[in-house]
Image 1 (tube, helix red, strand yellow):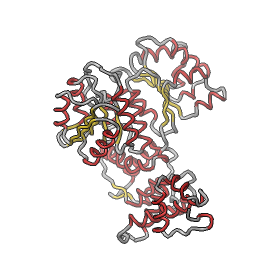
Image 2 (cartoon, helix red, strand yellow):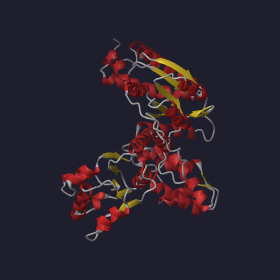
Image 3 (spheres, rainbow, N blue to C red):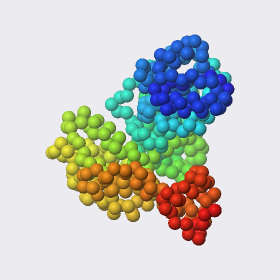
Image 4 (cartoon, rainbow, N blue to C red):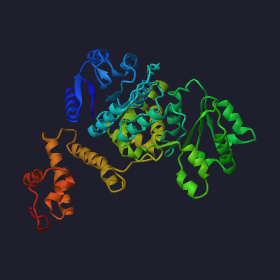
Length: 456
């Protein structure tokens, strides 16, 4: 890479890491913890790329983007932020940031994006940027897992394009809410948002009426797999004759549309026309780490609507994390709303939650063997919680961090040694550590070296 990069972040460690990495890559770097200093550099004409945090001690990095665009049209800005919500991604896109990455970010990924920014020939004229919108009470997406962060970035990228978008996922994951968010934060937000279901295509003029109603706005085709052959044919014709004032087309489906095409139950040409951009909304069981965040969000929302203030006991929260949630986010919200109405005490107990869920839930140890697709992080979290619970409300003895690392490291190294037939060079490469480090760990952890795992 070649160029001068302006780095603005109040975290000194991040400034140091980025300065070292960019310097090694061949760039000159100016780093600061002050937004005022960054803006002074921009006004002085310094820098070919800006990498900026959002929340700074003396201002907001997102709010500074329009000013940067006015002062230096075409100067690319990469936004990095710990405020990992869909609003941040959308605001970064609205402010025409070159790119957006949530913290913690992957350094090699950021370096690749920086190289693309520096190599770009973009010299756009100063843009009139809509001011960032404040988060509404009905924020449709809540989550900080990697899967949700990737979804936020994709939503922000496709928001103001005219490409059709196909949103797939299980029932209750929030497909329709995502479609509404794409419309509400797009340039078409002042135009109609119309939902079309299979029953709406009745009559010769059904589809024409829908298109006219959604003119210039967004037409959401809800559960496209439910449309019969005649309805699919009409949709194809509608997409083929779209004019300049035609609505943008979004579609949702909880069915596997590729399988429907193979079965002959969905027209191939409709499938390809709708899938300009496709993304899948993950089920709640694949983002268990988001359950506490979603729980607090829905409790706060329900409290405002119902006027009741309730808290969940720690035991109830543990049950929420362990429950498989076949109805996904919608089921979680409905359960919490019901509890706020039916609970008579400020603290919602585990027994009340179990009754609402349909009876006692399996205990954590009992569930261990039943969760076939459980992620490693979930399994580790479950065992760690049980370890803390064994101390009957008291804290475990000091040194938990080292004890836990030892418990994980030892079986990992033993299994890796078995998998590589005791070849320590291969084992070190497999683990991604230095061979001398591996030798030291074998000694420190007192790992027995069998014939199969003899020292090299």
